[in-house]
Structures are given as structure tokens and as C-alpha cells.
Amino acid sequence: MLAELTTVTDVALAQILRGRLAAAGIEAVLFDEGFSGLLGGGFPGIRLMVIADDLPAARGLLGLPENEASD
Image (cartoon, rainbow, N blue to C red; front, side, top):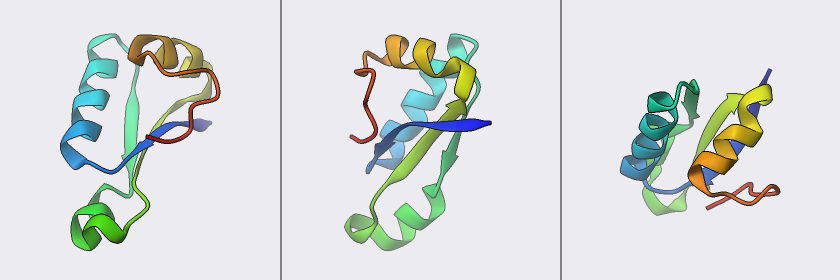
């Protein structure tokens, strides 16, 4: 099952975060990436999703608080 790690509004940042996770062996998926590019600033953001079991490790790697859900 996937869990939302964070939401960002910048496509490049989303890709960088996904790359950092991948380098550490944590698989991540970006949801709504295409819509964000089409709609620009009016879109709520790009969701960075990881496997629920990897959520604590992913938060630690990116320095996100335990209850982080948005950028």
C-alpha cells in the first residue's frame, strides 16, 4: 500500500526528492505530476508516495517531521 510522504508544488523538486529516495533504495512514485505542469500555480501539488512500510525511513532521509503531509 502506498502512503503520501509529502506534497510539493515544484516539478523539479519532486524529481530531486524521488531521486534521493531511489539512491537510498526507497521506491517512490509521483502522483499528479502532469496536472501540476498543465495547471501551474492553481494546482494543489505533486504527491510523493512511498510504500507505507518505508514511510519512516523516507521521512528520516528527507528530514521531514513525522506528521509531514505537505510542502
